[in-house]
Length: 524
Image (cartoon, rainbow, N blue to C red; front, side, top):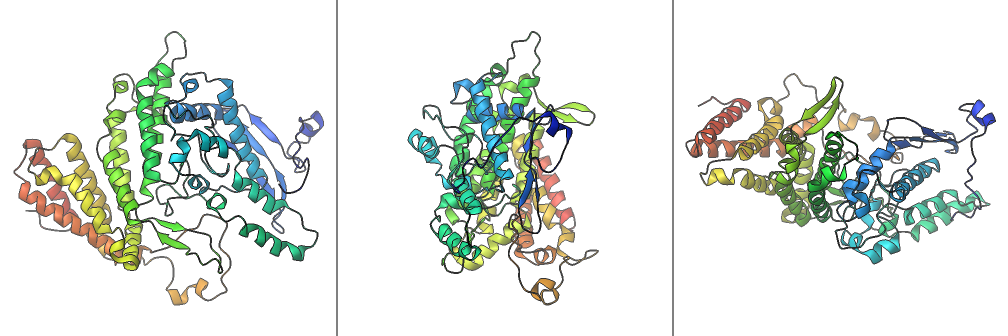
């Protein structure tokens, strides 16, 4: 694409090269017989010019076990070849190819491009014609787009793994095409970029799953509709769950359930990824790389309907007990085996579920997310999905049976406590005052160095949108809405404290005391 022939050449390592060790004149692909399940592509760069002087690829042996888990969890529902402990060499080989290509991309200077998987419509990834034509699951092999977990049984998909995509070809040409005159390069490269403006050529770095702002730029996701993609993915996980023991049979006499537990963990991890892909839409913003002349906005809040759908999805899939995953037949035979410094420990599925629910609530009610929702409301008014809208949906779900005066199940009582705990974490008595606290580390705006010096270009790392610190959070409506919800819950539980069975009444008295203690009220 950049106009060079035989640009990449590979040779067997000779004894003379091996004797020179890690000499920087050699770029080496190293296979390491290790239990580590990963691969990486580090490089040495000349800081004066940006030239890549040397680049290596390190391939740890046990990455094969990770690839096997991905294939079984993500494609086993519709791919018969993936339903066995020892996968065919064709599947493992194809997976090894895409990982190796990804690392070669790093060697050539390409960074992760986590928005590439958003280029393809979710439903199109169920189309054999479409996937055959585009040849993969994302517009770039530099995304963390894995196997096609969206395809359903009967879709007859053949292309299930990531491939080199249109973004990669464009980026390599832009980065490596040679121009005889440097003065001509800038104009020609800008013209080149103007011809590549469709969504297949977008670029965005990765974000933390828990604090992501742009829901399009996430690792491990596929498609352009997180809720629809997650729905298809969960439907496939439901098909995998009943088959875990059978698919992990090694054929050896006296086999334990260790392999089944590993695959079970893989299913739970995949499920949790889907939840965070959806969560990023709540209080989310689209962040685009724009130029002065293109007339496009850089920052756009996620649409109201999409945010509402995201909250409802989380209510249905994590805040309503997913019994198919945590109360399954499999749990009669194995729990979740966790490696710890003192050895393997078995974790109860109920504990894992409650832990996941806690994290989802903490992250959903995070001050930064709620402050973005209020910022959206300031800009878009009633067209925005507001923090009050979200709180009302959660309140109705968590306390619907309380309002009706019904006896609560153990799951319902646990979820109510989880919700109240998440609210208290950020809205307790001491959160609204500055006693024994420092103001946010940054100085006042007029004293801040960045406001008194020329502004340089943005970093090539992921973009961080700073919409508040500890001081602004403390005086924002984020704490007000959480305290308002706690007071609403308190009033409800006081009015219903004698309804339901004994366990329900004990639960109400406990939660009443927790809220009053957190808000510094006299316990009555």
